[in-house]
Length: 244
Image (cartoon, rainbow, N blue to C red; front, side):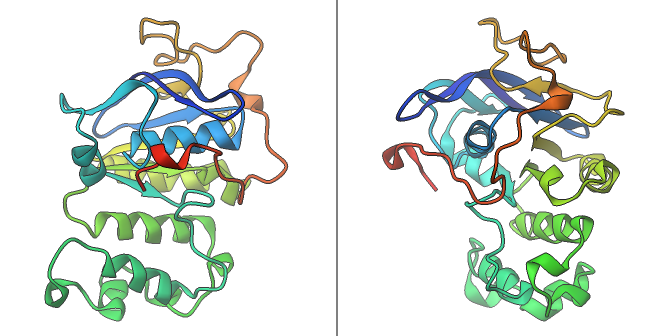
């Protein structure tokens, strides 16, 4: 179980992540919706242990150690953070991620054999923009799970890749169905969504608001504010607090 309680991050000119609480359980896809790229990515980074919060806490089970969080929660395709570089073919993306696995070099899988084993052979010589949303999300999620310590995935903005909500929902739901904790931080809630939902900033101080689908007054999740550039803008957090 991945739990956030009154989680917040301060920015240079105001809150980067307003107080937010959520509880994501194994086997169930959990959506978190936010107004801006900054707060969405700040939530994804703090949930995955890549950024230290200024307030509140994130826990894996009952453990709030940031090292444990980073070892258990994979961050997938975060804009400006770990999304594939445009100048890299996917074989280079795979090679880079596999080289970072916390195991001896001889025990790390070869790029081609890994891609074939996980059904990504056709992606090896493609550029990121040549992959459809489902293929891209599956490849990047499988790369995160190449570290066998990972039991949770946080997807940052999967809905930015396609107008077809079913495409990314089906992929993420499939990973959740294998017993993983899966959180998707999105710009808007699909009209058909009836699962667990958190609204970023809807924390009422008890940790309950936002965990059961409640919304901030005047903010309808299905019509989240979309930034002018949702694929390249990074949060303006204090680098000293960023543990990436």
